[in-house]
Image (cartoon, rainbow, N blue to C red):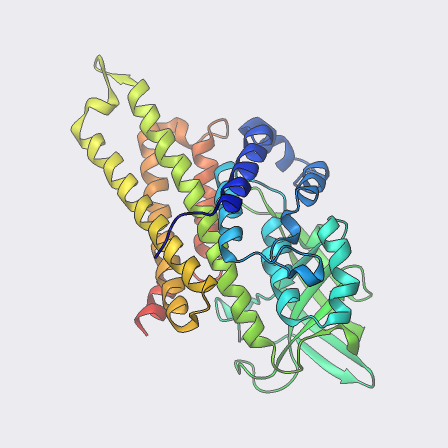
Length: 375
């Protein structure tokens, strides 16, 4: 397997790295977290101008025909800066559904504004009773003439407060946990009957509880085939896991490198901490675990890009398990090595650790994916 990035991918990597370096000092991030929407509209416009929002779409649709590798490159760098702009919610989740399920007319109507950054999308898929099962859906969409009426509740919808439209997974036939019978609909965020309860998450991002009460939408808002949305939903979930794991790998790199630097500078009993053997062992363990995650990320992403679905699915489960377990290990060691200051808001260590904890809980935690891998 060739792990070398192409020249174009390296240029993309450098572009995102410069964006993070120029805009995401911890002080700037803390200020953005405190704003009403939780990110910068100006930086979002810059992201659109750089063309990152067009990456996953075909050239015929106005995109660049990118693969999971380009998304990995971007997300790893965004993870190093704990970037707040909703690239993941829009491009990986919302855009992931559009590129797979939207018909030509829907793409023509939606994608130009999406790529320009003036239309924002997110995916409302999670429900309270479902835990990590995408097929456990109680939100219903009932056919009513040439329309559908949606009723139900979705939890932890990323960046719903700033989204112009939500892509909603609904039950249109079958039982509560049947994979068949799930349909995806595009719903305006300000439609009658849509209510949002917005809140900040522990990692500084934004999410919402969304309730649908007799929300009437036109049948043309159906994305893909009726009752066949689970295949799309599962494919998007795999893309999301790869993207989140790339973000986690970027965050873990910052954590272990900052911790190594700290042990070289901090003195105890007249010696740098780095001279104590027990801490040397700890630094080596953090580095080795990080490298394992990075290697498995490359493998899973390349398998996904090559279309080897059966092998890629197994690697995705293994990757999410390893990243969840390793993120906690590296985060805990980084905090412990820094002592009490490791948990302060003024030091970025705690911010990275909190983000890693949230990533572990998204789209199935380490234990969930270990069970899937074993099965």
